Image 1: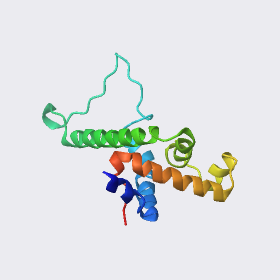
Image 2 (image 1 turned 90 degrees about the vertical axis):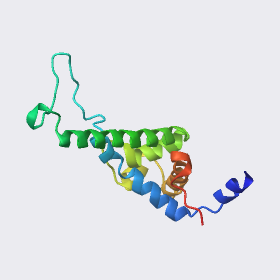
Image 3 (image 1 turned 30 degrees about the vertical axis):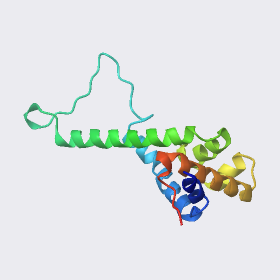
Image 4 (image 1 turned 180 degrees about the vertical axis):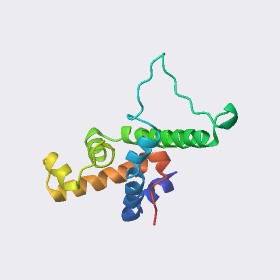
Length: 143
């Protein structure tokens, strides 16, 4: 059991941060694919249905549904990991990766009233903590 904790000290920080950045950079795309926040409200009087030839549901609709479900599952794993972090680190991750309007790093650290060096130091801590929290540490790379 102690071996697991000792391995955590041998984390390849650079590669782990790249994994986190790669995954979280997809968040906005995943949100669009899952129709999160972009899906129109539907009332009881309206229903939308796409039918293929022969009256059945088309294959492209099935594929779209499958992509949407997969995207939503990934978003759920990301949100679960983010919720395990402290509020300060959640804010950094939210501002950089999740906020609907994408911003440059400069805009983020000025908006948070931080120096550039403090921002990158704190972002690294948040990325590494996210890597530990996400899907049982799946993003962590050990030397």
